[in-house]
Length: 336
Image 1 (cartoon, helix red, strand yellow):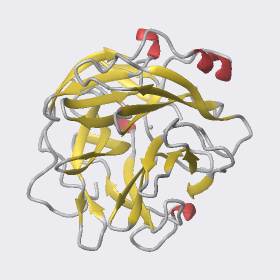
Image 2 (cartoon, rainbow, N blue to C red):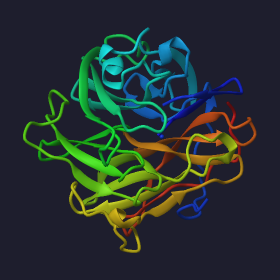
Image 3 (cartoon, rainbow, N blue to C red):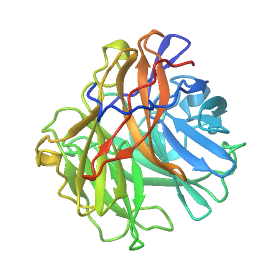
């Protein structure tokens, strides 16, 4: 899948509403520099760090950085590195215009950064890893060490190795979910320390739409269930995007995942959390992140009042008495 980033009203090709209840307090109105596609957010004691898909043909297409002291007002923090890792061109046979869909995860003091390398319409793709022994939220571009390729896919495979997201479980195990289009979403076990795939393990199928659009998986555990968030439908088309955020849950990390009506996500099931509403066109590319105040969801939308520019948005995840998540209403306005 090809990700899009818009900058200053121009389309830059790159890099993944039925509201769950009427809640009094809407999602926060974010401010500052919000131009970010496929966002991942990490909440740290010294501030929040966000990363997203690189801008095509700008700064070597490396991943974009944003920071915030309060999770509301965001500032641009540049880009991660001045060149793409050497394994990217070797795997793809070319240097792509940009890197896509990063995912930040912290284990102890170490931050793990998973990211995608691919080109539009192909599943010759790879997921890479960088680590940082002590990420500084005021200087998020420093301290990263390239750990190379985690896993890949090639033409003829039934999956696409992009859109990674990690989950560590209470039993000490670590998992990476990933996938876009093709046969959908997959899962691999990781070595929790190295962050690379664990020897002797195989992939598990989590969700599929039989070749239709599904991508941007993210896992979180709550109340005895593991929840799988995904995006359905058309990404990266500005105001014509039809992306929407879906969810299912399972008693096991490895599935089966079912939606609220009991339909398997392997059979195209999924409960809708948010779709287009007002200026918030095509919400998706989501990922869960945790804060002391509770679970949050980071996602992008295409600004219906800003020419379709993709903007960062965050939302509290509201857990119902039945264990199902909902999202509050979108903000009454956005102030980029």
